[in-house]
Image 1 (cartoon, rainbow, N blue to C red):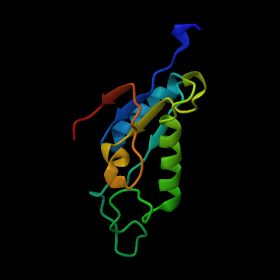
Image 2: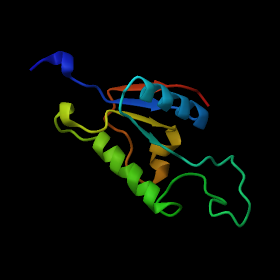
Image 3: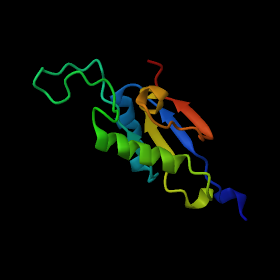
Length: 119
C-alpha cells in the first residue's frame, strides 16, 4: 500500500460564518471536497414571527432535517473504515455545531484540528 495516498481527517473550526464561507470557497477553488456544518447564530436577531426566532443552534427540535443531515456527515467523518474510501475527510464547522450541546455526535476522529478564528 502506498502511504502517500493515505488521507487525514481534518476538522476546521471557525466561529464566524464569514470565516466558514471563505474557507469553503478556498477549498472549493483548489478542488478539495469538504462539508460545511452550519449552526444558526444566536446573536442574529429575528422578528417574533420568523420561523428562526429564538433558535441558537441546529438541533433535533429546531431544524430536524438540517440536524439529521449534519449527524449523517459527522457519522461519515467518524467512520473507522478504509480511509481511502471515506466520503468526508474535511469538515468546516463552528465549535457549537459539533459540541455535545448540539444533542448529537461530534467529530471524534479528526487527525488534525485547525482553528481559523478564536471567538
